[in-house]
Length: 318
Image (cartoon, rainbow, N blue to C red; front, side, top):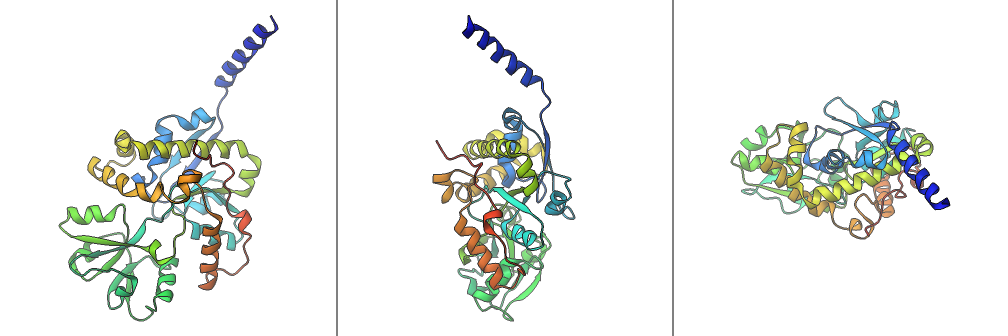
């Protein structure tokens, strides 16, 4: 009889729990919805966040939508950014903490025309190269490969028109995106991963604040676990999520989505993610990035690396 009553109370408790309103949280992206964020949208579409106990809203990013300031102001609870931006935020006294990094290899690179190939970073000398203003990666490459004064640097504007007109021109890109569009416009692009230079900060990683992490560890745990499962599902069957991506970004064709998904698989499911799970961050990677940014004079203050990221919520593969 006692066991029967216990079972009844468990069932009633579950029923009552299902009736409770889930905590509402928001995540802001670092750009417009893309397949490079597909794992999060897969988790949302499959109801994984709600299964884990949170009601998540994903807010698109874009020009003029700074993710870390929105996080610091309490407008969102999670934000997408990159590891260098996390370092700069901590340097300015903004207590953000990285909790999940889907990409093991940064997908940023240089795109060139195969008619005038770039096989190594030294080959950029004498070229016109489009770079985002103030890009830390360029400061690193310029110094490491002695390119100062040898490259005509122009501002990257996200457009391919100038690059298409000049076959000796080089532009920064996401190697999982722009080459597809370049081919569609008749070009024959090649790419060089910036990570191959030794500068490889985590990209599209998710951060929260120290206070939110301290006050809501269960919410953070739910977010990370659902996100990781979403990424495994997305990488395992990206075709299934084509309608999901197109719903939030109608400009993405099915062909483009599949191409991007296949290109990003080796950047996600490799390295530390194999043994430790998608989302894991290597402490040595953070230490190396810190030393690189310090060497470039881009950080003014000492940073406690033990507070800048955590793997405590990232499930290991079973």
